[in-house]
Image (tube, rainbow, N blue to C red; front, side, top):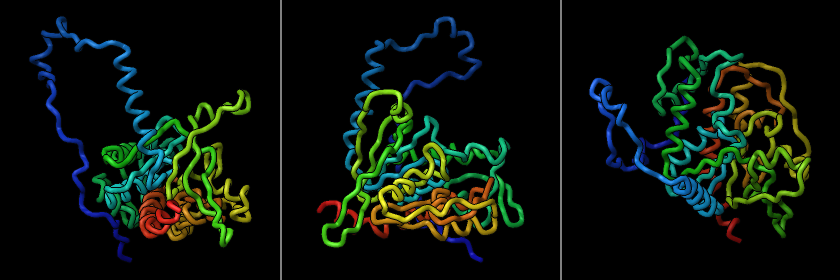
Length: 315
């Protein structure tokens, strides 16, 4: 079987322009200068202003986004990579509940470091430049953190991507077609994760919002923040019920996740292990090929429906 192509063009020049900077001297030259070393002067308020003005500028810019990706695990980051590279004109916001993006992709399985990907998922590793050991029907990245950090760094360098980490999606923005009664997702409702965790013991702390014609949810299987979007669809009666994740079966699980990555309701595409809760798919355990290729397919699905959803979003 020939591997599926990663439908992205060769790299765009998305890296920031190099800026002049003072370079550190070689250790042998600098060793005798540490006693006179000092940083450039700064006021504490300058640091605060440097952070906050950029953050709030991003909040303003991405309040109207083209695509929102919920979850910055291996599937969400792969989705963001393909989308940002294919369409540099799109504004892409990534919402991640954790402080550290990457989800479960920092380690292989059971705290082991190596990352296994079944072929043909190595095509994506080739695309992002992650080396691996070739085996018969699979490849092995020497440490999962190498894959995650490489992919994360490439995604964050795109000028059309903003990651809002330590931020939770608390709800979906929805619209109902007056003619058909069909529900459409038109964005996300967000709050800082620490605020979301304390709604039960604090007074009401209202959220923020991001409008977007396409939302891609990749929050993983059921958990405190997992499978949030599809659970919300059930509570809104947009889908009848969840199928519930089944036991581990690598052979069937990975194929099912990639093949079933799709738009669940208009405006909401679901990928990765969140799909297992919708479809009653098996879990695959510590093999990550389905995550990255589900991300590729989620990006392709978004590009297929984007123009239609964007037009609807303007109505």
